[in-house]
Image 1 (cartoon, rainbow, N blue to C red):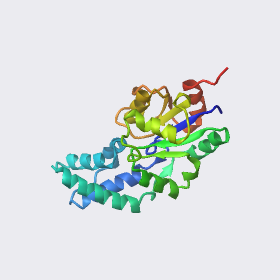
Image 2: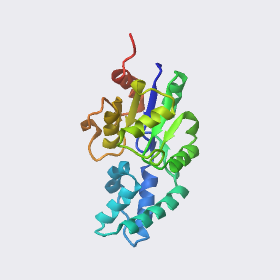
Image 3: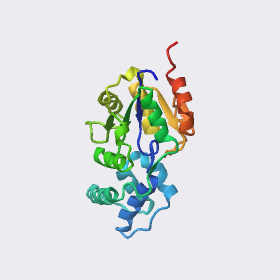
Image 4: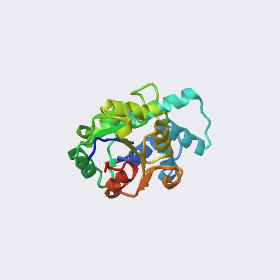
Length: 225
């Protein structure tokens, strides 16, 4: 492989974290005496972060709230989620083999996620994936986070890469808009969490599984002739 830096989103791109995120959200809602929400009502909110998921849950149950109340619920979410971060969360099919292949061909691997860095690292540790990545840029790693382009550019820099030889991989409008703002090619995955179908978001290539990744990579960043 060329001198490439491959930067992946985490939730909905590398790892199917939806079951544990939704359980944690429903846990804090239950503590407010609210009925749990079905997974399909929260799935498309995941890419916007846990605070947004909680706020959406409250709104769907017709509950008004103050910023301080949302802060308290978010803190309760973090405590519960940290203790239950990898109950059902698993890498998407074919992901681990793909990462190993990319490493063997010389690629640098990084993560750019709006999940807190400490939680991201804990999740990767529990799933045995930390060693595969040169860099992890979480929501609080830099002063900015996605969709600000400097979050992605910072992740590339942490990995020792060059933005001119980098590709972003993500599942949502947040990922794709970040990559476009950073002028980095982006591959969209269809198996993640997004309100709008990823096919409508303007990614440079789309894959339905990681078996299609190498072909997509060659389309968005052709090999030198």
